Amino acid sequence: MVRKMGLMVQLLLLFALLFFAMLIAVVVLWSLAAEEIVSIWLPLLFSVFLATLFGITWQKIVVPFNETEKLLALFAAGYTLEGVYDVRYPYSAGMHDTLARLNELLQTRDLLQASKRQEQYLALQNQINPHFLYNTLEGIRSEALSAGVHSIAEMTEALSTFFRYTISTMDHLVTVEDELGNIETYFLIQQYRFGKRLQLRIEIDEAERSEIYAYRLPKLILQPIVENSILHGLERKVGEGLLRVQLETTETRLLITVSDDGVGMENEVLEELNRNLAIRSLSHVSGGRNRGGIAIVNVNNRIKLLFGEQYGVTITSTPSVGTDVEVVLPRIVDQKSGVQ
Image 1 (cartoon, rainbow, N blue to C red):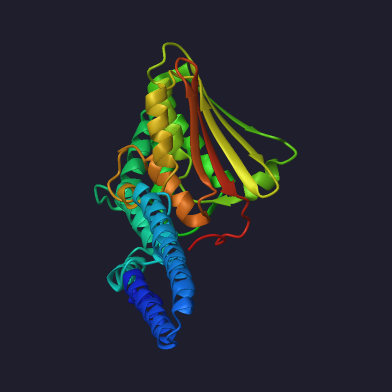
Image 2: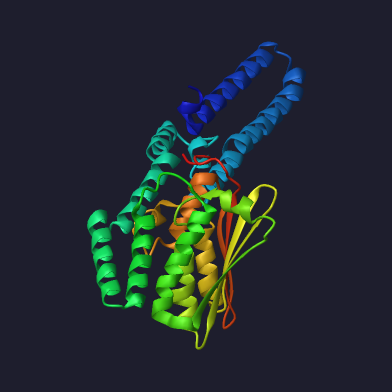
């Protein structure tokens, strides 16, 4: 209840109590009718009053103001969605109630659901009936086999497999093996366009392969990164290009690095992208930036919402050399661990 009164009301009450305490002390001293007592103690009492007033002002105004401003500035920049709800020194009851209401509206669970809805929307952007899509692709594949055009049959089968994985439910974590299988399918489709210009290499320590394959991660985490590497890194490169997906572990984390030897990024572009990846905010939960898949920023947002700020995506790049995208995830075996 005292906290809901707000900082300004608390200060007014403290100043009033302090003023009345000093007033009573002055009256008591004056009533003693001892001029020497008054002349000695009144300046001292006034000095104590000023020192106390300064201390209260510093502790109750300057320190709270600095802490609150710093927290609100971080929130405005997108660095946190939680700490701002628990401001230690609300300026007023209105501010306290507003932040409490904001907390109700912007729960992490709600943001995660919004992110999932966006992913489902992107996957079903044209409201295509999945069964109609699969049946149509199977019909094309059958016709191609009948005509002896095996390349069209293989490409159609790969496309059907890719859509089946993409459109299915997003609610649960998938195995690393399944996610890598989807990457290989997507890369196969791209190879029909680029031919042998593109090569894919998946690198895993053989001693850890079976263990890493069993770990679980959010679905469609890697496809947008691979897509971005091809479209913005390798497609614009003259000559052959290599895409490497390297998986390794620490005691508590799964590290996945997607590297390309494409055209790379300029420092300004890289810095801006990493600034966006360093935060999670509402502005990146709606409105996909990438028609070909879920935007990398949204992938990063989803990881942070699921597992915390210590996980996510970081990018390093050198112009004309290539780009590395590192994804840091917790090591998870249970299907529903970490999903809110």
